[in-house]
Length: 73
Image (cartoon, rainbow, N blue to C red; front, side, top):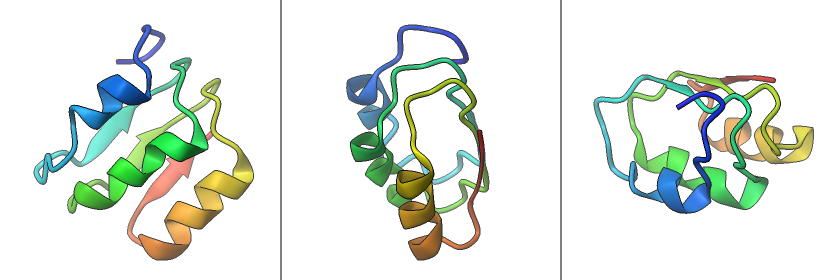
């Protein structure tokens, strides 16, 4: 998905994909409000999010609750 026109609406379509463990949203229009969907991806471990619209605050808030997840910006 890197550097595509994926938005939070598209990310929402991945909700519940429990087997997904790596997600690349680099350069996509994904915002802090959109990453709550990560909580439904039980095996998600790595998210590449450079050049997305995520903030350090948003990343910290999700990683605090989902400690097995690493988000790289």
